[in-house]
Length: 564
Image (cartoon, rainbow, N blue to C red; front, side):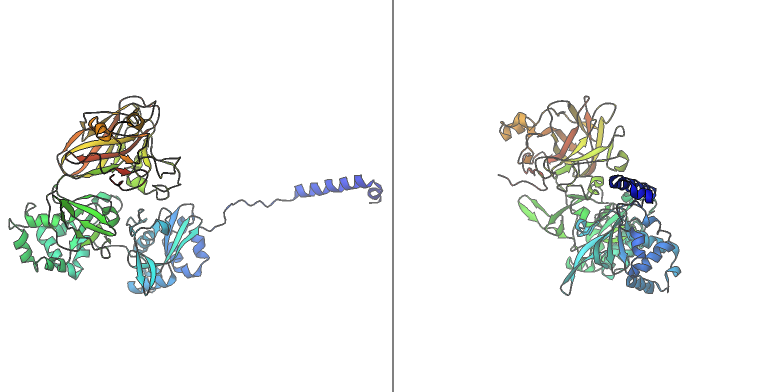
């Protein structure tokens, strides 16, 4: 120590610094390994006593570990009081007394495999189904001057958008119940649908609506949708009992005959597939179980009207769907209520505007699909699509204008469908299932984003029949900017959006005779080796006697542009 003190002060300071550095390097460092300390769902529940009973449900069903893993979940979380009320209704004293299968189904009904905030809610079906397979329906209600969001018309959201490490939580005041009754049973238990129930039974449709769904197949096409009529709706039409209904509609006096008018009357109210109000609102024509017959649908503010049309300048008033009663989930479909009696109408050809991007698989990308400022490109694999098929296994892409954030100047809605390698040996043929097209003759227009190089010709087929003209994707709007619109139309081109874009073009590919009302196959086939992306906007099926230029589409957003 004395020797150390005899050293010059600068040398002593250097020696002390080196000793301290050695000790620091020998000390174990505590490194923060995580960047986010937000609890996942299960750990969150463990920290919140008011949700201990739902945590117990997760533990009994062995879903607790699953809900603590990485993911993007949405949990509709019932409070302890809500679970106690459920136990009381079930007639049991504890969760352990509930059959395990029932408890598993209830837990799965409360969980969605995607993060859905309340800003993504609409007045109707949530786009993503629950893990159980049934969809949840949200809406708004007002009680005693206080507004709240409801789920499945039975539970109110008490607290929303609680962020956790693997998703989001919405706290609800009642346990959601699995819809375990078939459509037939759901209809029959409603006393105000007693006449409609009798009509189902005498026509044989009751049995069809009483078939259960195998949820392991998750086949949405095996579901059905019913537009039911109440006794009051029948009474307003002068029909008070089943005999009067038979007398009015059963022209063959055999309601079991599929050609009998009463059988057609009932089958006209039964739609294939699972169609909630949110689905009906965007469907201009609804296919029914009555052969070759469809129901037109239109959204007037917040009311969905069936079969309302202008014919020969005269408005034919439609029938409203009773919104507050509808969207009733059954085990094999969904039930709606028509506000009045309605009959089969002879359908005339009506325009169909098929946006190539309007696929359910893209729509489920709720944080991207038509959201301004979101990522401009999102690609999805071939295996994910139900109504689109193509060669090879390259994905197809939902593409918004990167310069404008998907808001203006990039076709209708500001988006296009992108095919990355549209050529022989890759995706040479891509086939779409169209919306419902009423039988008749139509002119078919295809709009696209043109380029100056690296693309080529495209053939178009409808139900395997080749159209008379091809699309030249080297042609864009610049080529025709100085030509008057009607002259341009006579040459088989038009400007389909307003304001128009120099990059977008629209080509008349021919006239097609749609022989049957329903959905059809539209195929695009490349005729050369594209070395750049191909972008498609809208396919327009316009009746041959309709104005082919108007209405135009709003550029970059929904709806139609005003006629100048």
